[in-house]
Image (cartoon, rainbow, N blue to C red; front, side, top):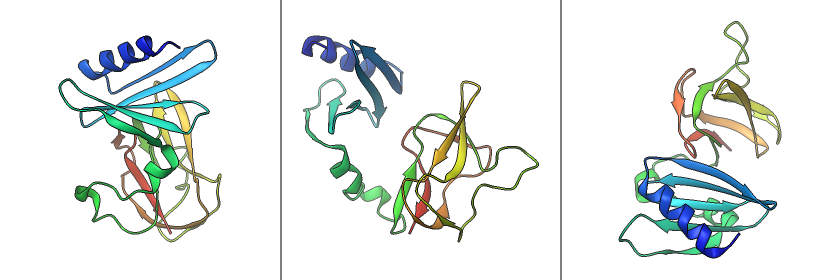
Length: 159
């Protein structure tokens, strides 16, 4: 993808009401998401992440996605408990169980393994399983069953 095309996409998302955009061209996959008037650009298979500002603000430097996840969050989120945070990978509706009659996948205090299903986020009539990226114990569940969630919203804290 040409740099000019990438900039055009970032500007279009920045100036629109969109909160996200997925784009693929010639085997290159991009996932653009907007949080607090910044557009986050993640190229699939690459460890670089760029934040493109909304109109009129200076650019933020490129950084590794792994480093970005490990850095402390903004001061407004410093009250969150210590542990590893599992975030919603998409916008949708959060469900704690596979059906209304079924038991929840996990509860606070449960021990989980990496790859274990923690919940479901329904988006566009598709049920997307949310899997743990970590081994540990569920310390906190941040959302209620049936609640709408945003991309990047914390769902679980695992210690």
